[in-house]
Image (cartoon, rainbow, N blue to C red):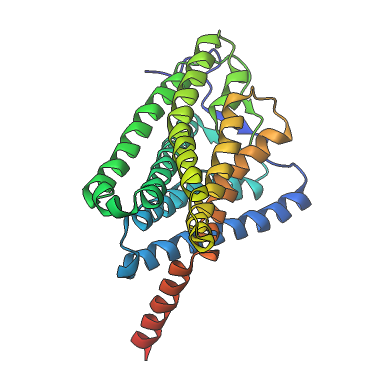
Length: 311
């Protein structure tokens, strides 16, 4: 299937975050720091969870997959952003643009499913503690993760087909720092009403299909926590969910607004995209480790092992 156009477009120009060299230098330093923290934090989580047998549980199995997804998600857009901040001409090939659209959707879509399954995991742990090991078996956890990738891949193919079928005339400047489908629509000179309707339906099905299980899981969790007589029990139960709840709000809040609200080319579009594609992947390891005694203890044990090996 070919990319149809009237001007033989082979690449797009990106407006980026700024055209001021001083601001671009500052932004480069900022996002380089964010990217390095993202890589370090998520790789550390993967290493610690893999090395410490105390963390070989369903919750940390999902968390390790979340860390892997955050590594991938951030790497789809941030390295290109860093390159463009050092370049006078910010361009991306048609193939590169399609690739970005696909990989943004597959990583973000899989993360949405994964956050939904992590909510169900917390529901099973708090509302059915005696049956938890039976409900969240290793086989079920693996199937849920594979299902997440499968459904997200299917959704991503649909989204990319929408982009491939766009018809472009003269406009080839994307008012964004990366290739995202909402930013491509304003460049098309053909009727995009059907494409927009399909995109909105796809996002709603994907978003609601992953957010509703989170909502109902937490409704049951809150009901169970409020029925607990022990203050200590309530506090412990709340602490096991608070990190995940913060991650859900950060991810779903910015992602759904970005794709459901018509693109305006304003700074809000850029901020929302940066929030879920750069900032959230950096924050997730901090969110899940700062208040988590098990992770802190595992980090200490892993560091102890490393020191012992070096001696």
